Image (cartoon, rainbow, N blue to C red; front, side, top):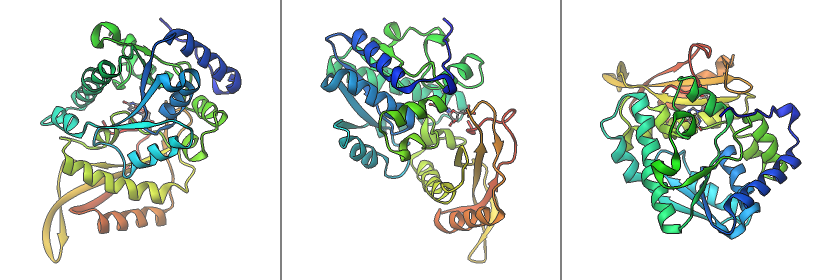
Length: 321
Ligand code: XMP
């Protein structure tokens, strides 16, 4: 089934919102649905559409997979409380780290995360809540890149020949699947979400696991989380589409306290792009790059090298895995 794109320029947000609310209400009927809110623009938009359509019959969960950025659960719960949405935090950290243990291959990591989300965590929440529908923030770019075989986005099934009802025991509703990021941002703004949400840089479903090359462990996530916080703090004033820190697997020789230290490497990426399909590295000021390097070397334990990524997409991709 091919999906009809609604380009941001031809989108009427108010009309789109009304139509999606109607579709969600009609599809779910008198039943209940659940959704997972990560705090990004896609899942925040879906949460408000679902909340408007179903009220209390939508249960919204924040799945704490242990791979999220600093302070995320608290931030998301408090923001949505203001919209009358009671977000329940599900602690699934151990489950995800267990599923990721020993895996180094990028696609296998994505698969382990997808299986843990859909087969284990969501299936359990569905059973416990009695819901039959999962509301999901898949957008058209996720579908395109998965179909093209570039990257298995964690949330695409039908196009991969997977029937969620047979595979996981529930149906998936995707209100945003005709839109790209720019369209979703317009809908988010029209729903009254704050600029900090509708202008927020994209963040991948596999979260910080997409930014750790090699095995994902709680310690390595803590390292990339710290570097991410510094990178986001220093680059938030740029107009860039997306920016991130990546933890490499290879160690390199450095010096600490006058002695050789075989330390870790952080790579910074910062992208100019409209829709993530093509992207160019941002021409950041040298001073910003220097600051980033000094802060990371100073504040992230065991790091002795900081590099800046200068290859365009394609052939590079935005995330490193
Ligand atoms: P890539 O790395 O494929 O990323 O050039 C394109 C855009 O998609 C984001 N991304 C993801 N988003 N689930 C998502 O929801 C994923 O599995 C995923 N992988 C990448 C990435 O951050 C960029 O904005």
